Image (cartoon, rainbow, N blue to C red; front, side, top):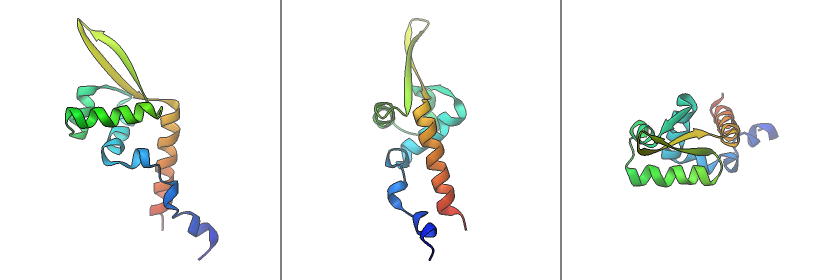
Length: 103
């Protein structure tokens, strides 16, 4: 086996923050949606309020997503979108998965 082939399978190159099922689904959804509110993300990934809340917080704390607080009429609304840092991490994650899956 060539040294370069071995590098392609290094598990520590997989971003654990994104690799969680709920966070992976969230990042995938947001990468297509652009901006979405809590309810839309929760529905898209089929998560509970508490579950999606924890995962959104982890992504936000890592700087992968940003939250935008606003009002929709008189009701507070939080929108989420992928940050520049998150988009870079997402692209690297997808590129690495492509390497792992390539023949």
